[in-house]
Image (tube, rainbow, N blue to C red):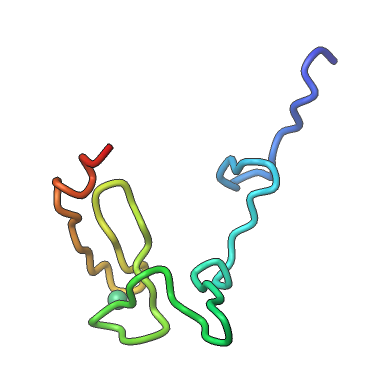
Length: 76
Ligand SMILES: [Zn+2]
């Protein structure tokens, strides 16, 4: 047993250890208020968030996508 790597559950995407995902990650607490980090889908309404991708934001429910301007992604 040279490598301590354990195979992840079948079918599950390889995730970084300790990386827990959940809807609570989309919120940020600022004082007493909760601020949404991601935009919500204009088609599905509030509660449906757009997933952040490298160059676009996509709604998982309806497939709505917004492309991020190149100027923003090219920022260093
Ligand atoms: Zn949507």
